[in-house]
Image 1 (cartoon, rainbow, N blue to C red):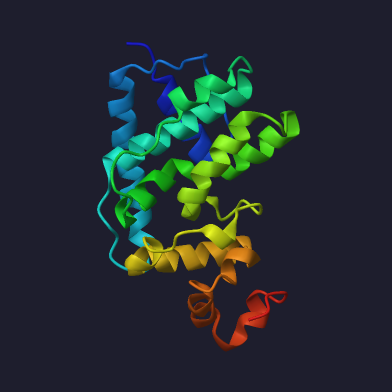
Image 2 (tube, helix red, strand yellow):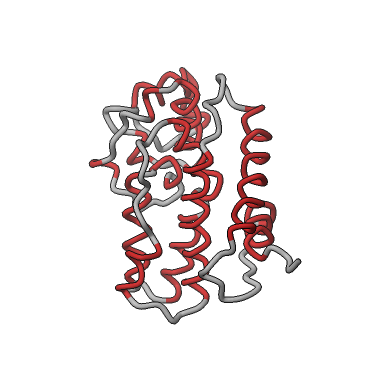
Length: 209
């Protein structure tokens, strides 16, 4: 059987943070998808060992949706043949309720979207794909904390604060990427204060709490 190009791409992206596409493939065979979901589940189970609280269960539907978003984004950034009308067909909305499980499971792939947008800015800052990806990060903002242009004022934190594991991971990622605008949001700032403690100047000198 032909080697699973989708799986090879995602493994390279996750392990080396590089994008290697083996062909221009938008119609993905189902057997490829199932193999990738098994890989993503394994990756989730491996990562959750280091989570600060008991991890929410793996959501394969969210992981699959995040995989499609990330894969199609990398395809379209390298194969410059898409039209604006094609984006709504490729990037469909997540059909289930967004939960802590879905946020963490989709993030296995969605965490690379900020870097994809940065690369897209170097190619064509007016590409409608950029706006499409920014809209996705606005909803799935745990995966977008690396993106400095994230619109922090209008973010919904209800899912983030509903689960202690996701909340602490969210706070840790804010601190890691020094996302000042999100850190100072009224819904999250007291959690940042609690995590940084009395020595916040040692970890984040230019953050004014």
